[in-house]
Image (cartoon, rainbow, N blue to C red; front, side, top):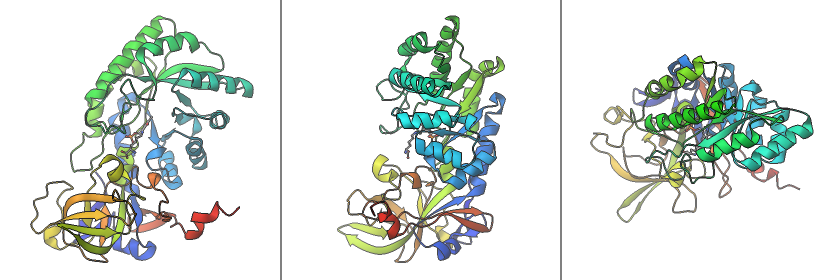
Length: 430
Ligand code: LLP
């Protein structure tokens, strides 16, 4: 469900040809579809509407101020993980009471900043962190508000080792046994009110079942805690819903909701609040990374397509062996793809190594990838690049970061300019 489509052999974002944007801003460039962001936000709100949830968009997935502002204008709260993301939320005019702040290493400065910003909840990851938040709140004469992040020891085997979080042995949250002790120690603290539970089991989670298991375990512990006299009025079930890197490969919001909503409906009906933290499903297919082919090179049996972007601007293929669909932005009619998939039944494709300019063998966007024949100067689009793309970009090899462009219908706006060499050294001019 997105607004990137081929029309007469040319990739368009909404009603704007990609080539028109590139003529104006050059390559590489991240290009986003405004309507896709809006559609995704609507779709998740709609699918879970029986729970009337607070949808807290995960800023870490794609945090440009214009995007945060756009979603905030639709009533979105925000999931943040650093002082920098608290700042982004503040700069975007987000209702700070709808901000949840997770992360295992919050510093004193970050905690103070968030308390002063009057965020909704700290998602608390350890006893030591709780004590620190309570102490800082006491010093400031304010009350902080906490959700204990529990670790339900549920994982999806298909989630990459680097992005699974719900099993017992990760740095995130506390296990279920410890959670009870946690409430007994801190559940009546006057400086940090603890009346909520948070979980986030990993990303991406390719089926509803791990959520069902994790939420069922969480509801059991909430029952026990209530029986012990504690108030738990909020449950934040995190994010992690899988996005369609391949057409139709992930469950829809509705499929997740059909499994999750009935579990949480009684909690909601009894006056409870439910929070969701989607990032990837909102942002991934709302963006592409467009690159220009610089050179074609044969290396032994392999054909290398060398591009002007790579792991420095999109690290997912290198870091997680992630597969993202890549296709030229202009193709002959026989090469117009009818879906984004690994197994396209199109004749005449050439198996290519699509690589970047960085001085590392690991710098690639795709390996052994069948694509239509391309030449120097052609444009390629890396699809599903909206989430964990630009936010994970680096300056490795002293490469400036690309611009970000937001398309709305037949118009577009640069929402982050291309960086310059001067930007690269600005903080070093001391
Ligand atoms: N909530 C918490 C506490 C999280 O840690 C995350 C993601 C989310 C929500 C949002 O998850 P989403 O709905 O976006 O799956 N860089 C990796 C993904 C890392 C996810 C980190 N946490 C990637 O590119 O696949």
